[in-house]
Image (cartoon, rainbow, N blue to C red; front, side, top):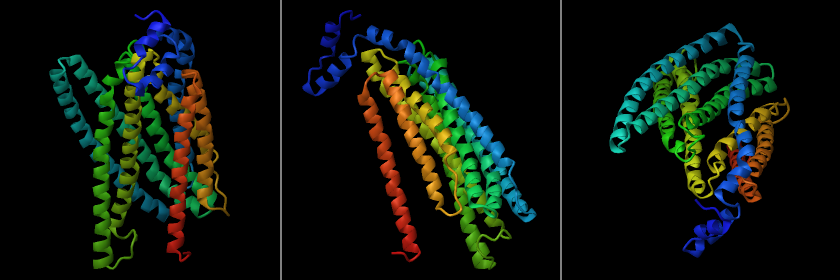
Length: 401
């Protein structure tokens, strides 16, 4: 154990000059014990933002779902067509997730046995298999509930669009928000819960390696959800065009064509449930991957903030997005993208504030805040270029160029 700061700095001195800057920077924080004593109380306080944000997001998703479902469902004909889409989507989801569930159990058992055998630790194998099943379950739940609301929000959004552009934007945004908030909240709560259940409080450098299975489980569900939904919707789309338009002469998107209903079902299961599972996998894998990278610096500093930081930052982002949802209010005379951009920029500003709070409390070093700020601003620039190219593409198709 290193007791003196000079010995700590001597140990950190790398053999090559290329690493000297990092070594000096880490050494400037003090010895591992000094770092932990200085940060422990504040760190334990800010980590509570993770479960609080996750629970708030789930409650917020329930609020959004109730708000969407209480809205007008439109004419009887609209309700008839909407009911067919709901029936088809739910039938597809039940069949798909039943198959995924069976395969997930089989893969989890095989994974546990193989990992336990080759790593000579069946305890590790069992824990990885359990994490795999939890990841798959959370991904399936977020996708299924999000899909349940989305197919019902479609009908209500179409009804609202007959009366007001502002109401249509609100219904569409809140209907999609249910899936979005559930995905991020369950991912964040799932990763944090598995981290602490696997001894993250006592051994923060070992727990992230044991919850990798959580990300594998989410990836497994995403693979089948994306492929299944994508293949289904493309087959239905081609069937609607070939049989309906070419052979029967039925106009495109006419509900008298059963393949059109199937195509609309496919759009929902592919673009909502499938993409939702993919996003769940991405958020879980990013969290776990960043935590594993943090282990390398934890080994030097003994500061668990490097491992917990990814979860804390995502929690602040989740809170920022909840607040930003209320900034998305359309206007009858403006481009709907303006309303979406307002919410986006509110989320950006609040995320920057959250980044500052997290880095200041966890690291006491502004350089990490500036690094995070560069990443946030880079996303803003990318989004700006995307909007610009979309606008030019639209003008080109309308004869504006």
